[in-house]
Length: 227
Image 1 (cartoon, rainbow, N blue to C red):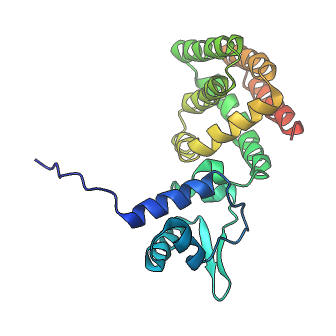
Image 2 (spheres, one colour):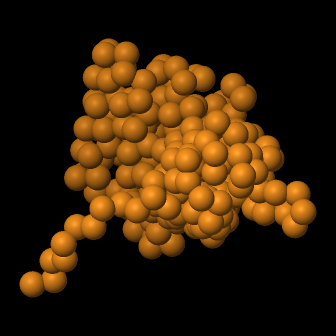
Image 3 (cartoon, rainbow, N blue to C red):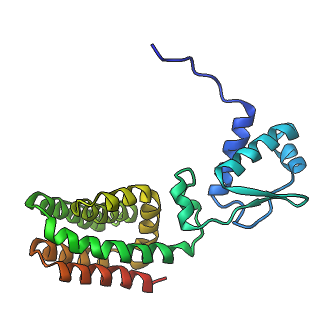
């Protein structure tokens, strides 16, 4: 069998994981300088070599950068960096929400138009089920569950297009889109999502591609105004 004994996590891995967690949680902001190797060595109670190895792994991951003679700094990231797949979406700068919304308006409006011409009865039923889930989580005042159902709705529309490039792009950017959806719902609340999704489903069911495109563009554009 291919099973191997589990090895205990070494000290260097523990230092790396702690630093990574602190970065993701915002202990140091993007652009901030990290404590020196000596300072980190004292904080963790480990050797400088162990700290240096952990920092090198963070550089490889793309979370920090080292500057000769200056030290280590938290790297400033752009939305496209999330394509890496290794960089957590939550770590992206807050201003990135505008670029995410621009991307969504460009892609999802056209996706809604395509979906209107390609949706089956089963597809419409799935959209109805997701909308029902949104309404139920709204009643429970569960913002995160609502946001995830909201993301599921938009993702499903992408699937309905049957366009492999759209589907693959949505998969690659999944974590970024989920993260932004939670932030968006936190700003706009529950009502707009339920309102527009109802109208978008009806437009798709009526095979009215122009109306579906218009509604999706309006939906995402209105969200942008809150930021």
